[in-house]
Image (tube, rainbow, N blue to C red; front, side):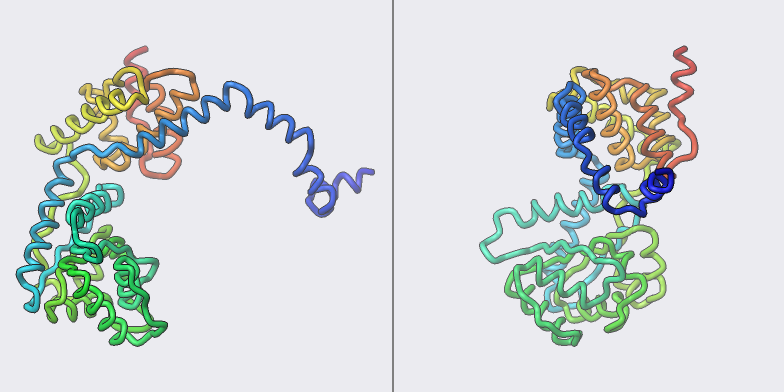
Length: 339
């Protein structure tokens, strides 16, 4: 009997392992748990986080980026057939690059005639090079693409599709993924120069700082770039950045109340808490949003209708520190001072 039990414990007896996994006792326990109040809180937390994810605040840096994208589109239209330019926005993750691009693309394509796509937003896959880029463009434009690895054929097909769609600007997200180039063609920057020199379309590259190395290796490509917009982390020591951070916290607090996911503000913009959140999130808006979303989940599971400092402390422990985004929890000192 002992040998048999050891076999089950070690996972060597598949039949008994399956019996443990589909145990009626576990099923009954889970059904009971699912029907209890804790499950109701889980459902409420899911709904609240889904609502939180829809929040889109008019963050000034993103609006500035969208204006830069608009200039790039206008320039792409006016320079059609002539040498085009590129805007490179390479900032840390979660600083709002993709959100700004998505919002701008929606506005730019709003009201376009059927079959027209003035701005095409694509994203590169891991190691994606020129062929991947052209496939992504054709997919966004609703076109099929030939089953070929011939770069010239793919380029011609994509350029033809962009002409038919009236595409003036292509925004390429995750550009750092193309840092190693492509096994089936030249580097991404070399191919982009072909598009720019041919006057086909204006280009915006979005990516993390890792993309700087890819671009800096190609001086000719650098000469075709416009000055980038600012979408990096906010610096508490800079008055403008500090005001942007505090203003965003205040608006976020108000918006959570307005859409009904909390009963009252958490006081996120209060001086000490705002500073501690900036330290924990390294001044990155995307990190802040993830921390507050996690704190919202914690508050609902604790059967409360608002977020408190304790929730934010646990959220930073469970998310920021667990993911290695920060080493210590600056909010803990607020609890010590309050005690």
